[in-house]
Amino acid sequence: MSTVHPRSIQEYLDSLQTELHGADRALVQDALYDAEEHLRAELSQSPDESESQVLERIVASYGAPDEVAEAYRSNEITVQAALRTPTPTPRQSVLGRFFGVYTDPRCYLSLLYMLLALFTGVFYFTFAVTGLSLSVGLAILIIGIPFFLLFIGVARVIALAEGRLVETLLGTRMPRRPQYPDRETPFLQRVADMLKDPRTWGTLLYMVAMLPLGVFYFTFAFVGIVVSLATFLAPIVVLLYYAGVVQIDGVVQSPHPALLPLVSILGVLLLTVTLHLARGIGYLHGQLAKTLLVNSRAV
Image 1 (tube, helix red, strand yellow):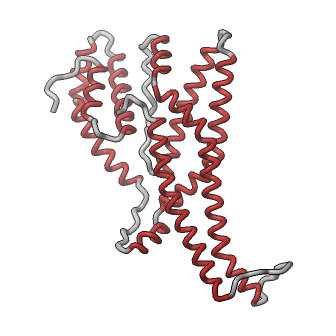
Image 2 (cartoon, rainbow, N blue to C red; image 1 turned 90 degrees about the vertical axis):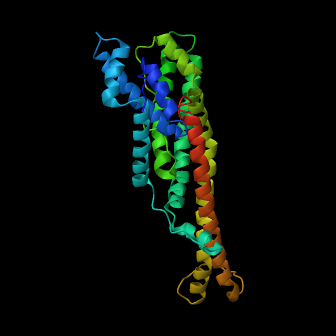
Image 3 (cartoon, rainbow, N blue to C red; image 1 turned 45 degrees about the horizontal axis):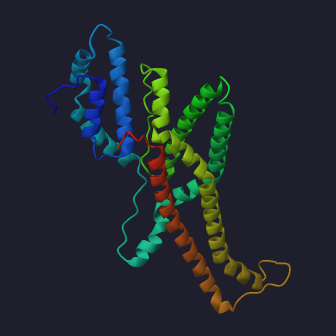
């Protein structure tokens, strides 16, 4: 347990960040936000006391940095265990691991994210490009700076919502709290800090990049599923056609009937590979989102 009480809120936050060294960046951002919000709220309610006196009292109830860090680590294990998708039964054989992908919910959630990415990508790209263009165009007017600050603020809210989508569908831990808005900091200083924060520009870069990524993700997922299922079902349809169950206009050309099962097997293999790649792409995109959207302070 810490024996020396922090003398300022910033010192407390720095100590908490040090104690959380090695933890997930998103967890660190959430812990810093919660701590700063609580400490500043307590400080504002005790205007007659110095910051060090308030902190000394708060530490006794809220906890020292090392205690808070340990509580967050323990709580994170519990929460992640509750939110984690069911883990498929480990397979020992190569074929078991290859086809075991069908029992992994992450594959289907990744496919769902990839299908949604086209629509979110178009929205993010349009918002980012329109906001940046209007900010530049209005820069010469008095409303230019307020509009740009509003644009960045909305972009951060959208980034937080995207983080929830990424965590839910891709399983990558993302922040559940925004960056704490310290209203005591002078306005110009807050603007300068926002412009110097890599997350500001990382968020805009992420929004712009989501358009080409969304097009690729949607195309890959849609084509992969359709081609795989069509390849699997085509031999069945052909057999039903020759049996007179299905009527098809025109001439139906097909390989030798003995080869039709191989075509269906090929469809199964294509679908299995698609699911494996979707899971891998989902993991990589989750890491990209964490790199660009998580507060650079939470390292």
